[in-house]
Image (cartoon, rainbow, N blue to C red):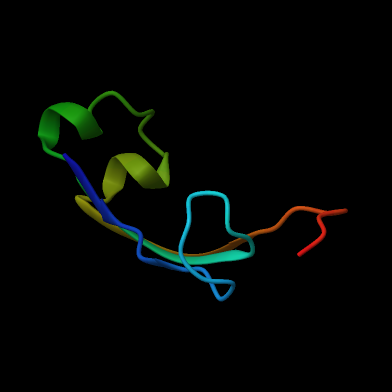
Length: 66
């Protein structure tokens, strides 16, 4: 099972095409025994039941007037 949250901020204001966009990402992955069994024996992902991912993303467009 995977669950994630990705809040974002657009310093230029509201709007679907406003740039830049800065976002935080948090994802939680929970693997049961069946899912872990699909990985090779020495694979780290097959050994972990719980995994957290934290990230920071930015998006902007070049050559825009604003």
